[in-house]
Length: 193
Ligand SMILES: [Mn+2]
Image 1 (tube, protein in one colour):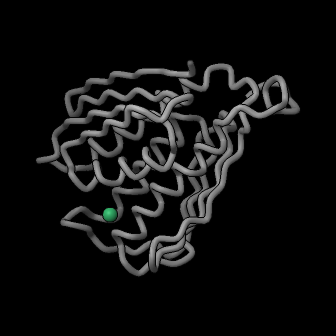
Image 2: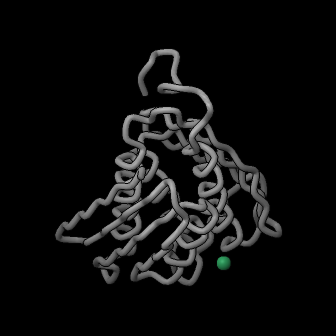
């Protein structure tokens, strides 16, 4: 079973995440921010992977710590579960619509964590949470998972639709990339990821 758990506690947050790449249940997501829980549940559901995440923190200061640290811990759990990356597909992509929103996600489990965030993301808060917080999640996740992650907002008017579509698109692209392919060994001409 390709499964890994990370627990991280700081003076700002306490986050636990487990991911199993060979199962789609249980899916259990809890954070202190209901909107973030909603988005992560969308990611988890559409990744068809088993995620168990619990995240608490000093949201009275700013939701930023909780969102960024959850990205760190989920990324580290994914990296651990991938292990030696033997026979994985490595690449994943999705063009995901959600009503007015259209999100492109393309990722490479490259071992080099980086986020490329572009396009017309709406710069409006949702339920009092500023839009600038969402790329912080994806940046932390990509950095700590060791994936090259492109997220491009092709169009998006409604902020809730647009950011939710980004989480769903990541889930779908991730599912594709972590699948076991028919070929043997690490999928790199270098022989290592
Ligand atoms: Mn929604």
